[in-house]
Length: 139
Image (cartoon, rainbow, N blue to C red):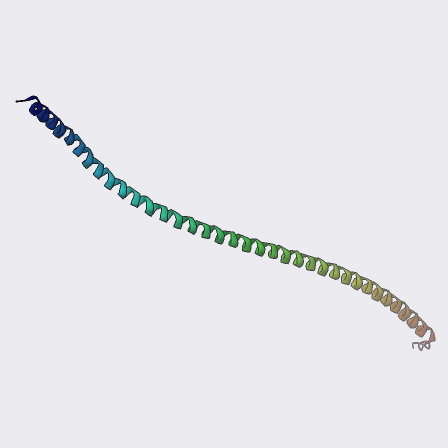
């Protein structure tokens, strides 16, 4: 065998031996590429769902904010209504107090008039007794 034949035989053998690991690496790489594509597809789905969830969260926060504002407005109106009712009750109590004072004053005035009528009646009765003829003597 000549030197060139030996060289071709050795280099061919070396080439065949080196292609085996390259083929194994190519197979592993293809498997990894399939796995990477699957992971990328899952990631794309998750990113889409994440965007949808973020939009839903924004809508929920907006709805909660509106409900809080409505509840606050209702509470403010309720406080205003209660304050007005308390003021009306206070005014009514003041009016009743004034009316009670007027009734008390009227009762005092009527009481004074009754006393005067009583005094006048007593004077009239006394005058009538003085004017009445004396009773006949008893036999």
